[in-house]
Image (cartoon, rainbow, N blue to C red; front, side, top):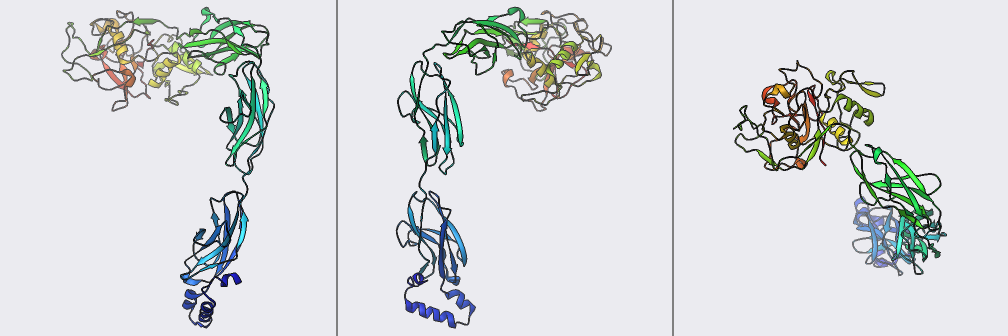
Length: 583
């Protein structure tokens, strides 16, 4: 404790204060005026930039102002320099010194700050750790081809720091660094490798593995390799079996026409909905020897255009054929092509004498004009979707709820009595005699999923009304007389009827004014000044639109312009739908 006493103002002050302490009979006096003793403890947890420093304090009383550890690169550090500070009090304490220099010796000592002086403990030293880069070695390049190679490395040690990343860098000049081309991987002790392509043929490359930590970047020894002087194989254009293009598959064939002296490593077909597909995307490897290859590409989407190429991999690289475009088929049903007038007037009706009505604009202001809509030609189902078609969809789809997308988990349909579809074992079957009846009990989500499955959609409101009018001014779809074209509450006997048993409209489309009302794509809302079906938002009731009458309706509810609504998760015994192709 000799070093502590030397730091007092003077021995006389010490003797006087000590005398006061010894002879005081008041605990408060002792607490206020006691002389602290300070002991410095050895530094622990020393790293490259930090160290844990502490001490032990006894005495000092209420006059103690602060305690901690001061440190520096020179002897006798004081609190006017770098220091740590902790809460005042007696007993042991510890603190952390930060932002130290690596591989440096520091002097340190504990202190207590009093009103008139600073009391220091014994002085010690510690030395921060030296920066140590990770240790990494470079492996021998492997699988060298004309344009690709497998590069390897191994991290032996992280040097005491967390690995940030590791990888390989390469160049056509010696001593490559991260300023050249490189490929990184997450840091981890042990061996690693990367696949590098798009290299130049017949070219010598220099390569080094590397590892990166807070201490810096370390490189392994340099290796070299030379790419082969080979070419990618050439292939013939893909031949498509046009007689066997399905909704979900297509048969193709091709041949490798030139291997340029190399051997086949892999061959197959690749495809995409965008141009120039690669074998790193959707692809099918064709097994077997020889230069010919053929396959059936499956699990495609219906009514979708695909780009298809054959490919072959050799040591010279990967060669591709010219691409071909193939469009898969959609639902095999009766389609009608509609070419709308430009513009088409949506939302008006005519009285029985053929004159334009002055009112009856449902969902519109009574004095508003019809809404002009410009549309491209499209195809729409000649009939409403039948029980047979919907049961076949359910068996292919394999779920009674939507499987993916924004509507995932929504019910597709409810097995109400009028539906005539039920499950037998693992299959959905239709009651005999009802195969060609329109399906009912389907939710909007189910109708929408049916259409998407076949690469189609529900008709939007303008498409539906344009098809229903048939290019005429008729009040009902195909006639001024509802009984001729529509099963309704006055002639249906209160039940569904087989599709197409009333007269068609002028486009050859059936049942748009009766039998079942039909889901459309749109959310229901009042018409706006500009009709944009791609940007419609849910109305106040979050309902989807229904168009057309049904066997349970009559009169004005059968008109071409009639609109009604239903929540998309619900269904009804008199609601079905028909399918539409917009392209």
